[in-house]
Length: 179
Image 1: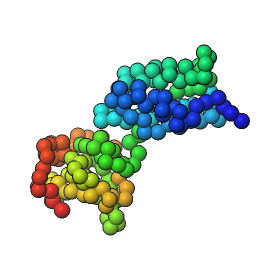
Image 2 (image 1 turned 90 degrees about the vertical axis):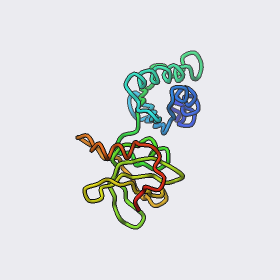
Image 3 (image 1 turned 180 degrees about the vertical axis):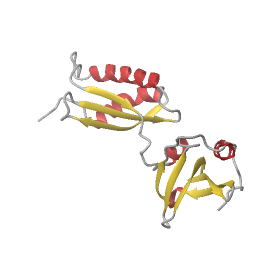
């Protein structure tokens, strides 16, 4: 049975250029043909956070492109479109995820079985700088991405310490990293 809906690949190919022009890339497309009306969810991510105005603009342009599929009637009124950003519970799995999470607090599980909590700093050559607490001070610890088994952004309800944030978002740090 055909739903008349495009495939994930078709949606991605159709919308990728429009999203790229806005500075975002499509991370995932989820099509739920069992929902009433059927739902097309487009998860987009970029170096800047998606704000409500950008989501609205991307939704309008995506809807227009999707409505134009398959002739004059297209998909119009036969689906619900949702454009959103990845949730905070999405694991960080690639260099771009860590780059985009700079300044955010994360919890890491490392390949040696240890866990580490710190603030994401600069990404460089498959290595992430993590600002960690060392006694009463803050230090940078460089961690190879291949050593990270799992990384999840932590929800924060208060502002980070100024020194911690400055280390995470500051200029390139050559050999200052603590190991």
